[in-house]
Length: 493
Ligand SMILES: [Ca+2]
Ligand SMILES: [Ca+2]
Ligand SMILES: [Ca+2]
Image (cartoon, rainbow, N blue to C red; front, side, top):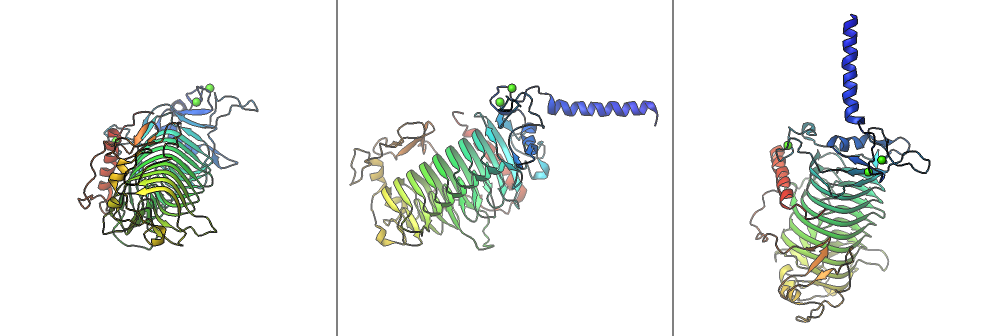
């Protein structure tokens, strides 16, 4: 080799190294505002998070980015210390700006899209602060993989103040934002998602949360294509807490094929819930599925619900109920408790229905106080469909519209409903005029919004429920997510 060739080789290698370091290491300060959170400016920064694994704990702890922590404020040992990441701008996976995620975008990845952060190992165990910015057009297509979600497997992570639009295709325990969370906190999230799975325990935002996880202040619109236990918000919840949640969810069959036996319970908020608490919840739930459904919980045991409001429409289902599909509580003297709840869920008279609970597996009869359903909308006067001794009621929608904490309409008033407040300390329940449905004040807005589109008549046809269309269908769905995201741009955050 001639000397000149060697110098050329060395020169080009140097250029390459310089280019790489310009991308990765050009920062002199990774935490400009010294809040312990490394700033994320680009999709490449976001993608890099997956590589920042603490070798001892096998957790992504948020200590570094590109292996660097220059500028992080000193910790106790006076070494630079960061504990998470924060968005410094909106990020869109539609990197070529044509309005959809497609083959021209940088994380297309042969149609699989962005890969989830972490799996069973490494787990995500850091803070992610969205600062109210948005991650748009997130797309993940990993149908055989468990825990598909932007943050796949979480241990004591804290994800908050983020707006998300996403399309996810995943296996068991998938959800657009989080797959699995143990002692994980999720707060202040606005999201529009589309989630599809041929597997069990899938949610519009979260796959599964366990052991003291907490979700607060979420406004979600979700479209779901599934066969088994599914929740508008979360597939499975165990010993977790949910408060100030507004979910609008549309449920469709993933496939018409009865391909394998499974637990077919779906809930407007949670598919399968155990020993969890729900406070200040609005579920606008729409079901056109071959499953048994509850307006809030699909199948549930020993949960407690307070201040819950259900609206929406069942078009098809195996059985239906305003709040809980199957109550399988069986231990000791405890049962599910529901305090202050109203269901205005429409259920066709062809479907076996309970006003509050559909199937009470062990005849435990959930303890209810101030829980009402519109018997004319749900076509049942029975509180629990399979348990006549649990009582009946014939309160009509007009009575529910007419009543207030002071107005008595046909024997109904909302005494005590004036007491509870939302996370912001504001009065929660609003009864409006005597022809308007009640609303909850959550995150500064009234839910459900009265200015939503009129609900389609049952059977008027939503043809999105089939999985047979392949990639083109997914592209169309994705662009729909993008369009809807624009149309429903949140008014704060
Ligand atoms: Ca920072
Ligand atoms: Ca700094
Ligand atoms: Ca694009």
